[in-house]
Image (cartoon, rainbow over the protein chains, first blue to last red):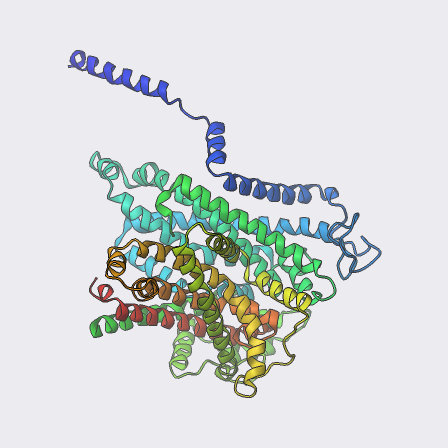
Length: 309
Length: 318
């Protein structure tokens, strides 16, 4: 039996080798290059996001890289200094350096955004997988709760949660978790429902693979693309919610520089000092714009099924 | 249709109940003791007696289940509880006084959005890759990326610095001074509806582009109908369904957006009330506002669903 099959096996092996030769396996680097070629805007967006994350990280670890201390009211002698060399983005109502505050403000946006999305989307994906895989009454219960949660406008829910928890960066993260979970659960669950019925999952069940093995080896890898895409898209959303809460003055305490908080002050002074409102507004818009673009590009590349959602 | 409607209406009851349980749980269980939170705000010192008093006033001294039944019982009778901040005032009055302005703002915003979005989307679809299409795609992409509060600021900035035009100060109600009211509400509604305008325009464009290729459009042209009639009566009429659904959903989202827009433009609506009460930690009022908004959204979604079923018979029998 072995001898008769060897010939066939070899033949197939040769064909495989030929195929491999014709299309060499792409290294990670090559994959990145081909992504950048086919989605130049996505690649530019990725660079903008990486620069923002880098600026937030470096200014947190080594505050000396900032032109001035963002809290120093004697950074500039004049208040409401218009943008000019030395004070590139001007100074605010206390004489603090706007550029330093803008860079320092990225820390909260990035910290809150990455942490809430990292935890929220991961937890949501796990619940979504379990809900779809277990099915029955548990699935029904989870879906009804998800439906009800969707009835709350995110910012309203966030306001309520921050009201009871108190304003701090970590409480904003908790509020964001509550907001991000329902949507993530719904998207991942619907994907798992279809994967569950696919031949390879049925085959795995047929050869007696356990539930945990099926979920980890067969389902999880197949929702990974949606997970990455969801993570990217919700990051922009999380940053906007954080900025909105800070803008309303109920999120992160006002003594910490945040883009939303800077905008609040800017709104009040908009007739004397337009730059105080415009630069943080542009910062938020550009970062969110880049995140949305990257999300779109990743979706097209990794998971065309999600298109139109 | 009646059966479909009844089924959809029946389904709303468990949803509303669940919504109320979520609001209640979030407001009561998470912080531990609201009375303690309220009293320990700032550096105020308080006696055990004051704490007990406030607990009794809030009703948190009773078992949680009784509290819930009591609250929901009041809710169905239109009793939203009593405000702590405006001590003694019934919350239903506070909310009732202001919700109309928020509704006005939201309706105005969606009207402005649809008024700009539909023509933009249609032109974009019938002349793809033209200058207008290109322009409208850029505008809509910017529109869905700019956060509401920045859109609000830009509107103020452009109109006040660029055109030195400012809305009249001091809020006027629609009934008292309609002209002044519309002047004041137009800017916030424009800022609020900007995102929705972009979103609806995108939906209109893609839905129109699909319809343009349909057989019945070719038939309509073949039998010699004027292009305008083909587009409006055969094209737009079919494109209107997805536009309507999206507008309904967006209307729910607008309620969230009004919180920010009202605070920028100082409109005394339900959004500014929510922020004031969050600052004051007036839990009964916060709870009431959130439930009123959530239930309104559930009802709006229901109405959109029913309208959808009414307009497209295929939905009912699916």
